[in-house]
Image (cartoon, rainbow, N blue to C red; front, side, top):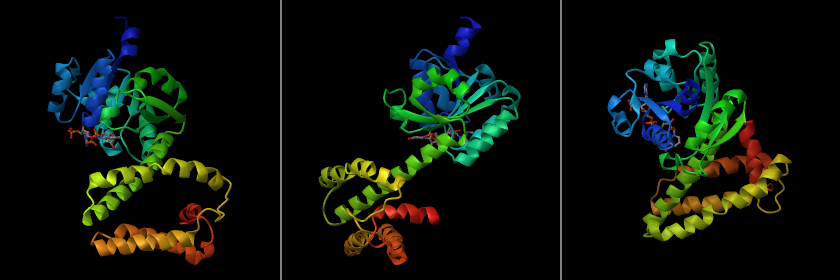
Length: 293
Ligand code: NDP
């Protein structure tokens, strides 16, 4: 294999939690030569049995390939690993696919640039089971030329949605998705707790939860253009209606003996909008309220 062929079809994966193991496995399935390293060496055993090469150190793993995929808990972990591999970093591209903040992504990209290495930020939107599956998706940002150079390799893992040059962008898109995801999931689990406290098993609640959750896409489509236009007219819903409804939820929660912190927070948030004089406006006016805070 020529040097050029090898650089096109080989990759290093550092960090072998559930995500990193799925990534290294997907590269192996796609025929890549894969070098792996993990702080706890035993996590590489299965991949080595499948043909991956175990590097003796993070530095050796970075030295092995031009493209270095990091799948670590956060960017502190990334800096700990990259710090120990510093002599090998010049000329490498680090695709950093762990979760952290936009600010941290910019810092780590700057830290790598000072050492002659490129940084692509990645925000993976699927669990390990979605790695290597068509239709799954990850946000990327960083230098366009670097992204294009490594796009084919990154698309072995997921679809790649390139958001722009700013290293913080991929994390920003990822974190706003996560904000929506976590609040929705916690809402679902809270509703399930109320159902179960009243003798309705999660399985019986399931079709109704699915039905309510499936309203969300239509709501997003309806409200996004209005929010863009600053149009919060209360022709479809009003903040006062939302507050009354949330109070009914709150009292149902109390009577059920379920933790009421979540609906109390919702009620307080909406009440602030009503007290500010926006009772007749749509719930969408909360975007302005959040922005001001
Ligand atoms: P973890 O977040 O548990 O990542 C664990 C990996 O990070 C392990 O390889 C661990 O090494 C390593 N690590 C942590 N701290 C250090 C350190 N200081 N020095 C060296 N290595 C360190 O598991 P996942 O694989 O699930 O997640 C990886 C990333 O992917 C996270 O940022 C996560 O948010 C993101 N992600 C995960 C998803 C999921 O469903 N799992 C979905 C989407 C994104 P060791 O084995 O030695 O402990």
